[in-house]
Amino acid sequence: MPTINEIHEFAVEEGIKEDPREEDQIEEELEEREDQYEGLEGVRKEKFDEDRLDNPFDDSKVFHGGEEEVDRVAIGIDIETQELLLVDRLNDKGEDIDGVIAHHPQGRAYAWLGKVMQLQIDSMNKAGIPVSQAEGIIQESAKKVRQGVHPKNHPRVPRSAELLDIPFMNLHTATDNLAYSFMKDYLEEEDPRTLDDLVDSLLELEEYQWELENGAGPEIFAGSGNNRVGDVGVLGFTGGTDAGDDIIDKMMESGIDTLVAMHATRDQVEKAQEKSINIVTAGHMASDSLGINLMLDRMQDEFSLEVFELSGFKRVER
Image (cartoon, rainbow, N blue to C red; front, top):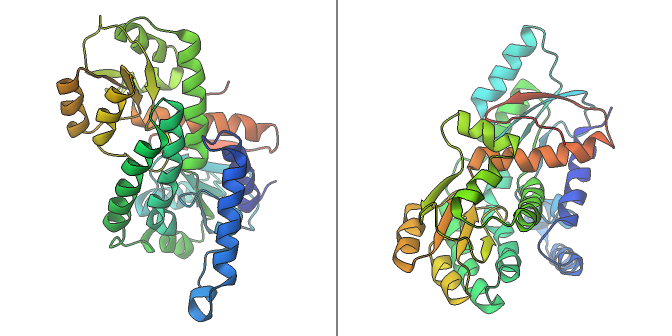
């Protein structure tokens, strides 16, 4: 049986393989962190998160019980204290859940959310947005995200896992990278002509069918169904969190006709309508489930794991 740490290390390695950045960029970033760490002293060095020396995904962490072996894990999109209590109660009823894997970050993984946004520079550049323009958007957005998450109660949920003694970790950008890579290739192969065709292509995937059943399937937020798709930008599938509405202007300047994203803000939709840019939102929970499922498919070749679906996650094997 694998340990929580082994599962996490494997997921990070697979996430790196599908990262929009070049591998040497990631290696350079990790080397810079090593240099930073070596230059620290006192409490700053003592409290440094040494996982950051090998793991470029600051929003994907092990919180408790890393050395514990697990055979059956509960996996959910959002895991907070109530889900941990639910797992504890389910175990009282005989479910035998050994550990919990969240998707969305908690604890220090949430505190560092803005750090992973840097990889969006490369996904934007691959979609056709000049790197200098992408840097301008992301650097400002990352600063706002850091300031926004800074005052949150970060130890709350990890401490709950400690008190309940439930092995607990999360995988955010590590799995979102797989969803991004898959969706980019999938839509290129499907080559939908209209926005309606694009939505139909998404609905061929079981995760999005399930989201449709729950009332939040793929949807055209800007544009109409018979609009031609044109050049597609698959953005917002990975890299921490939303980059703001300035991306719409850069899409227009770069000749991108249609944005396909997990979700879109009201400001993005309003600006897209003004600029005649199409937006298709694939669906947040479905897209998160897609990335987790792709990761689990790879894990099944490495580990024997039984999955207990929880908190908006739908297991689909490919």
